[in-house]
Image (cartoon, rainbow, N blue to C red):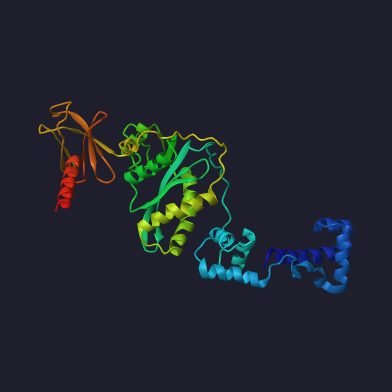
Length: 403
């Protein structure tokens, strides 16, 4: 029974009790009206109607009268049918966006939600818990970014990890892509995409995953003196890396993923996407631009804390990579992951034997050896020098041309 009907029943019961006491002379008209929370004139009118019609005279006649702005039944049926046939797995908010943008609907969100609830297609939300104050957003874009991953069944019977890098100031998603499993390389990719497109930012807020931080004790504090490869890269870039110690601390990104999980699977399904390559293309070319347009908010300040990255792209790749220190062997080779990387002769030194060098491993499996800032050699994923490989390719091409 609706609330208005319940209140009417309560009014009937209270009035009959008060009316009885009034007729017995136990209450004055003023006292009776005060108890019922009405004025004396209204009480006298109720008494008159009660005498003439009984309890039916106390009924609120407005409840049986259709409101002047009541929607036609056909329109209600149309909304319900649209939801059932095309958007049954959408949230109300997601469906409402489609209703307004794609189907040119003009009704309010509340009206649409009520229609679906009364049709039994959508459950009413539970009452919210105790209010908690949210951490104030950063005033400008680029002061703090969030990076997080969500493992979810984004398409039917298939789980991927979605990596999102977003701005704290305005909720804008700068980078988003699917991978089979999150890790150091996916985190590097997210940061790289932001720096190339937007510039260097001030700080990054993440969870305490093992690729982000080294944590000596389970559930304890992270050890900032023993950075991971990702932590080392952030130090080189001058980006403050902040660890979150609870899901509540990452509330902004957690809420973002809640919205994404409620919308993205349905969009991928309607686009008939099945592969991770198709999903990433759709995500970056279609979904994220529309999502930012819908959920991006205005930052407190119009300024930006981003600093443009003016150095060559390959310099960024040599920071956002795996760096391992090695000692050069007597035969001028470096051992790295069961591969022998041969250092070629150069004009600076006859031999680099016993020299401490750094091996840079890139996302595609290729490597490079550095002695300080100088690159001593670049190698393919199989360990061949790229110069030697290029010579082989050029020779093969030359033979092909001359038959």
